[in-house]
Image (cartoon, rainbow, N blue to C red; front, top):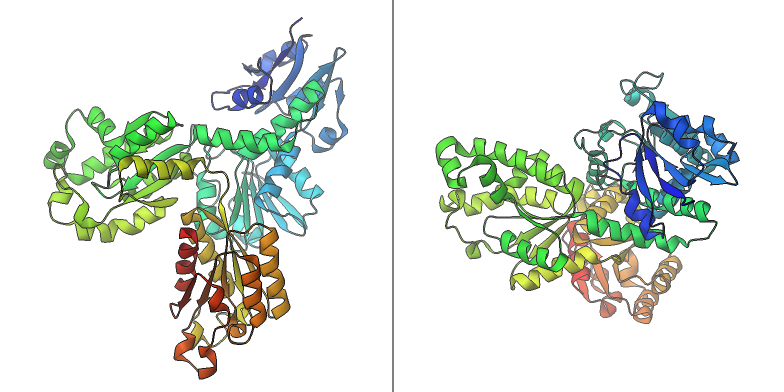
Length: 554
């Protein structure tokens, strides 16, 4: 008798489980949609080998199990069923996936106040994970419970970690967010169990606020890996989870191009489609199809407002699909809803050219002689939409190649930011010299820029010379790609720091908020500068961002 393997649920059009399990070696894995009244008869079938269970049946299936794994019993939710010797056993592998995801994202629950949104099966898993990880307090938020969305800010404004287990923001209803994170000012971490889209509106806001965050795709793959181990009684290395997660992201994520009119989005997009094998979608072309007339005619007859409305509708439809190369119009970023739609399902690249190189023929707004004003208004919006900036100053093939290499890259360049003595007192220490930005805000500023540049950053600060030397040496063993260092007063005294940078051979940029050479004479000497690839002085906290960009170019 051929064994049956698959995902059991009620509506499964959004599921990515089949390609995941096939990648793990289960070729016959399939989707099984059932109505509640059919659940008992189906689970009595002897040919069941192994099933995963999703919404809304994670608790309903428990009554049909001959045996339930103790961990699943404690959680109160089953997402994996295995039939052995005629007996159906229930397990919970969601907790394996959830804990893997948190650790992968660097999110710790230990000693934290944790908010869990939702009260379904995934919520039970999150609660068990919080208990396992030693959370200080766990609060479950539901629509009608004692802790609800109306009283959340007043009762739990001190929460540090938020976990969303509701379906708000899940495909196909991509709009909306379960909560406004700005109402929870103490938050440091956000996790969302939704995996489609890759970035829900909740995660987009967490990104905007500079919070650590984790989406649901690694959880989905890791729980599937654990389920396969139970199905076939075999060990699978965690490296498979990482590989499959990366592969799914590459296959499902859209590549979205934004930029000024004439920046080359269509030409580069067509070349990217050739390189990637993804279908190419020209947003302006789709607008023409929907409107039944050329874009200049829409502008002439109905004005820019009418055009933007059509653009918004078409962009939402296009970006709800996955695995495409999308070339947007120059003004698509003007509406915040459009920027969110691009980022939810895509990695967004801003194509840049010098204004004098931008063609204007056939472009109504460009022909009006307003390119400089257009760039002034739209520049910040392109920056807000984009994950990476790419200068399109070479051939379309070369530009497309740079984007494709970035898109395919799994390893980000890593930069270590080191700050020396008294830098922890930023905002307090001589604000007339060092400004009002505090140390936490400095880290957030650098982190946001790093994400734009596609690099990862870590931070180290100490008031002790030996600790700074240790951090530089450890960077060698951690295979750090670059060091951005403000040695503070040790700039002028420490040969040990100079020797450490020389010893590790890691490209290093020296940065100072003020310009030491315009201050007291004893500050004019920099020992470490001799070993650095660059030195940025007197540009305030923005100098850190300049240094980061310099290291990325190395």
